[in-house]
Length: 317
Image (cartoon, rainbow, N blue to C red; front, side, top):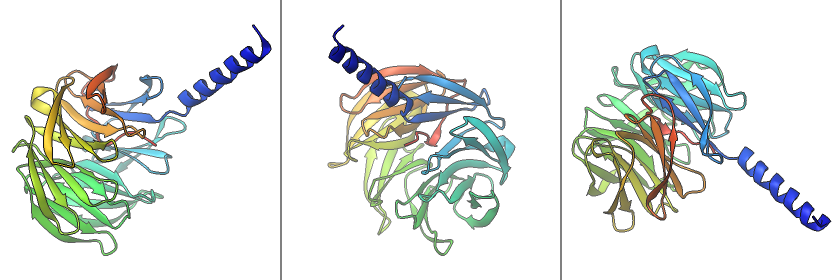
C-alpha cells in the first residue's frame, strides 16, 4: 500500500475511533431490573450496566457532564452515577415519593418531585443536602428548568395543572390548568414554549411560558407520556404508551403530522445532541428505539434491561 494511502487510512481510523469514544452516552433506567443501562450512541449498544436499587425511574444528566442522577421511588430519593468512572457513587434519601428529577443549567442544583407529598425538593449538588422544599400541585411528576436558570416548571399529574416556580425567590409564581393528568414536559431551546403531555386526555398542551397561557391543544394518540424536540425545535415527538407509537407534531402549525411505530409501552424519550436522532425507552419490550427525526423511521433497536423507563433527559452532551 502506498505510504500516503496508508497514512490516510490510519488517520481516518483514528478519527473514527475518536468519534466513537467521544459519542454521547444515554442512561436508561430499568425499573423492573433495578439497573441503569449505559448506551454508547456512537456504537449503538449497551456498554455498561449499573445496579441501582429502589426501582429507578427518572433520569437527569448534569450539564457539566460529570454526574447522572436517577430517581429511586422505593429508596425515597436518587442515585448518583459518576459518568467518567461509570460507577454508582452515592444514594441520597430525599422524600417519600421521588419521581421526576432535573438539574439546573449550572449543575449546582438538583430538583426532585415528590409524588406523595406534593412538593419539589431543591438539593445542593455539592453535598446533597436539601436546601428548600417547595409546595406545588397534586402528584408532581415531570420537571423542566428554563435555559436561563430562572424558572422551574412542574407537571402536577393529579392536579391537572402546571406550576411555574421562580427559582430566585423559591416560590410558585403561577399554576395553570392543562389537560388531564399531565406527566412529561419539554421546553424549546429559547424557553418560550412548554409542551405538556397529558396522559388521560390524549393530547399535548402548548404553553406560552411568559404568559402561562395555552397556545394550542394538540390531539395525539393513546396515553401520551413524554415529549422531546428535534430539528431546531421544528418537530415535537411524543410517546404514546397504549398504542406503541410516537406522535409527530409540526411546531410551526401545531398540528399532528405523523405516527411512528416503536416498541411496546414507550415511555421516556430524548433527543441526541445531533438534534436528529431520538431515543425512546420501551417499558414492555425492555429496549430502546432510535428514530431518525428527518425520515420519521426507526433505524435501530437496542436491548436494555427489564422495564426500561428513562423518564427525563437521559442523553449526555
